[in-house]
Length: 110
Length: 110
DNA sequence: CGTGTAAGGAATTCTGACACG
DNA sequence: CGTGTAAGGAATTCTGACACG
Image 1 (spheres, rainbow over the protein chains, first blue to last red):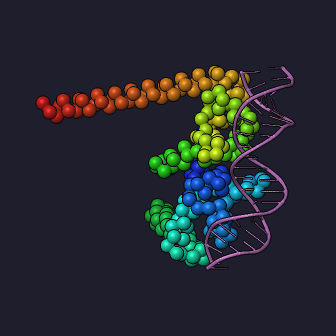
Image 2: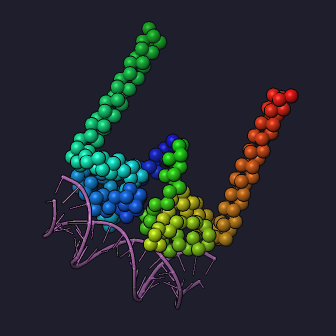
């Protein structure tokens, strides 16, 4: 996946009506999930909401959980946990890389 | 690039207003280029045009050529030539692959 | 809590046409 | 040829609120 492709996934260009078609959710539901901090659309100059493909996928996950009876507050907690795990993983990888670099320079410079 | 990423680039989900912002072209210009067969948006259920990121990139190419004074008829010809070259290349590659396979089986089976 | 709906206003989109050149 | 614009209508989007539960 190139940098350009990433920008496709995260570029906020889809209007709420299309998102509704794509996800099967009503526009009312989509706006409500925003109110509950589950999703963050961008606003265009005149105030209409714009979503990315990543947002659409996130909304589909939310829809699945809601169908299983999970409340929005619960979904929010799960998402925050997931993000935390991701951050921890990234820090761990960073630390391991630093360790390798240190070991490398110890051997090389002495 | 995975199959999913391809679908992002080619999925027609962007309304003409956003395309106008993204490309700097007026909606009048975008509709006109469609009239001249340079671009093929999809129509939603109620008739509004929907564009993909690939369409947006194509429109930016068109904009560049128009700035250089190239007429739409000329741009259309160039695009058709380009597509033809692409097809020829693909056929050539296919033929070469077939040749390799033939050579392979000749040695193996006799 | 989560979602539907009617309300009123603003902005978008569509088509066919006239204008300029 | 390529683009702007006014025209009239239809559909979208927005917000705050009431309703149900």
